[in-house]
Image (spheres, each protein chain N blue to C red):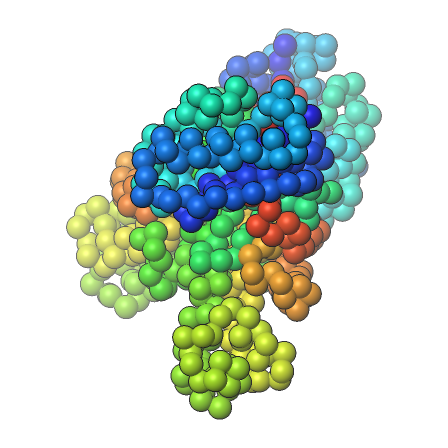
Length: 314
Length: 314
């Protein structure tokens, strides 16, 4: 049996054929064209799934189920997307709509939860029963896996780990609160702090690496400069590690998962990122036990969402 | 069938006879006399259990199991108390030792987890499948119940919700970190802030209520003064609510339980405490769903630990 996983994004819809072991063997994507109504978007999604089946010389009866990961709030029980602000979706019957075109079970979950499940089934968290996947991007995405399953709280909207306050009365967050973790430890936060440092310290390599155009600073720039020995960049990075580590230790003290998996572009820094975080976790986690939690880099990149969505039906 | 629950404290050992429904029908306690070795302490504990059985005209065969709640780190699988710093216990075989005197199954858990289970089985969280019990005392104790069961993390030491940082670089916590929730929202924190305010504002009722002896200020003092209209006390209390609410919203955003139960002496304030916390949760929790989490006052007081310990075997 094979599984189909779909990642419903604001720009594109990506779908893939996945084995029982969580191996992605074929994938394909189409533009979302999000101005359209949901019927058109979901008809395209169904056709994309059917194409993938055909491309792989399979038929619908070789497929166990389709899983869809989407931002926003899912109602997994009823297969309804309660809201997805990106697509302007409100109470969209994903399951019923897809089943107009394909006679298969359809599962639905939040995309960050799917990414965490993907890593848990076939990626960095494969060997662990419980894990938290922390994705560092525009914000901080989080997915909690307990006993091999997605934990999404009582109302399907838990796991919003980016929105826990670590700096009381701190910087404004998009969620309305002040001082949320993601305001200090997302990729966006790192870029913001690198820009501020670049302006304050014109001699810093953060500037020379972008030929003085601070708008070209990305999350990699301060890491590159720091690794070249730039003092200003090193300070920016150390400060970033401090806040990132603070939230990770918070998660570990509360949930004590077997592993915390770090994803998103910044995770490309590998051990340069993991080693200081490991030290913070060893120094600061509560009691002797929490330091047993492993820290690892995510392995599946953008495929995690497709694989996790596919595995919803498993 | 009946169940016996034991609360192993630093000062006293309290045990009780509990029905299948979680009703405490008889309890008794003895001093711990913690300077003794564990064999003597546990012999006394066993005798206390036997006495309770006898007092109620029951015999050992009427008892399903004994559950023991203790501070520190339990190894529930093996019935071993890995450590309990209060009693200077290290790898103490609670189960094996009690079974020398009573032939019954023996269960072991952390005392804060037992209190949360007690509230979940027979107290304020009875109607909810998932809940977090937050006990405001010297520190902040926490117990997480998911799907009716204690969630204690991968290494039996999770749920340390008091030790998540809400004020980066804030006040020193006993755990080694800075700015933990319990440094701002425990009863100790409230008393500390009330004392500071009393010194700064000699005219405040906080002073007159204790006849000018600030060492007599307890957690109730600022509440009493605020309810009498004292401005300084009102500020202390509002500030306390702010930090208490901040951590509660953090927990809800991450775990989204059906209910958060507030225990400890301060919870005696009832709606005066719940109403402002409810407003903070409504205003600040992430998305529309998290505001569905109920906030309630704990119902079982100190009995929660005994009842929860008893229910470990259920």
